[in-house]
Image (tube, rainbow, N blue to C red; front, side, top):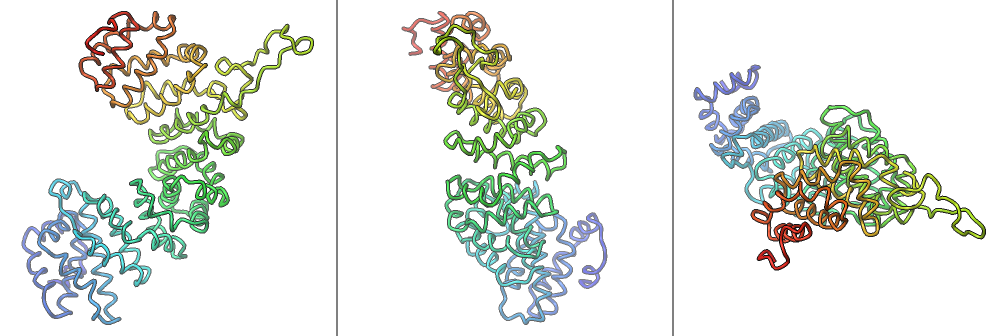
Length: 492
């Protein structure tokens, strides 16, 4: 029976029916038999039947993993039994994939429960051939997506899996390399960067850039870009990336024809996040390099055409650019004898920064045409993270002495209306407090207090009743500005 089940092609429905009708128990008994040939027959059948998630979960519940792990880790298997070990590995991979199903999440079913199991299973990668390596890497990729994925990713980082994966990313075997890159990407997503610092050197960054440039596998390229986007943001790694040509590759990815293909979408999102490393206001030389490559208009376009995460990272970069604009806005040269100010100011004086601005020289959001798209993202996004990133960029226009001129631009662009609308929506405490802090500054100007105070009033009163302690205090202070409360109110 087992030989037949191993060879016959079955639909998923038939596989489910076979388990339901009693095929599982005899196969488990065979798997636990002391005869290696009997075990091998059972493994071949289970490999064929375990590809359906429900069957995989049943195998885990019935304790099949102990017998499978025993075979996988058995040192007494002869070299001729390598095929059996590969079949066991593929069966284990199917079980791991089953733990990503919704049923596994509801029942909290896990395949590996101890760090020792993870260590032993991962250690096999270094001592296996390419086919087995790929299978084991895909097993861990599935486990990292399971309900216990966070703990598994943490355990992998603790056992120095990063070091092994970095080495595997340099292999010529494209299937193993792609699986290693995707797993490495998973391990970078939790923000625990300490385990990467010892292994991400110039050679590693150059290899990641090369993979993005040359890979025909869009999922692998997107994962490699994801690794770059999540690497620790220290100067040394950034310099390694620049020396490896990462910036040019990021530009190419962001200029990719926009499409709804999932991996191209992910590639663009990761590229937008990676770019934000090089747009920080603390390094104006990097900002200038990015701006001179024509990337600011691309970021503005992403606000309209990108998916939510791409919009978020585009807004972050634009905010960082805008933080530097006043410093790079060229002073206005007035006409007149010996520089006396008898002439009229030139027509191209920036309405916000009071100097001569351009997209490439001063990174000005107004010159880049970014205000309208940022306001649109602020008003339309269902993702509060995107909304907050857009708000952060918008608020750079009213920093410091720019309050009067910035408010005028924001008012003309509809930003103040959108900010007040958001007060009526469910949003995070942090976003709400940030919005209230901005309105408190804006309402210092009589023109805008008069124009928008009444429309904000009901929302502000509601926040004093239901908001966080910080939001209640800010809302109350604004209500004092609007003469709705007095300063002796119990809110203070």
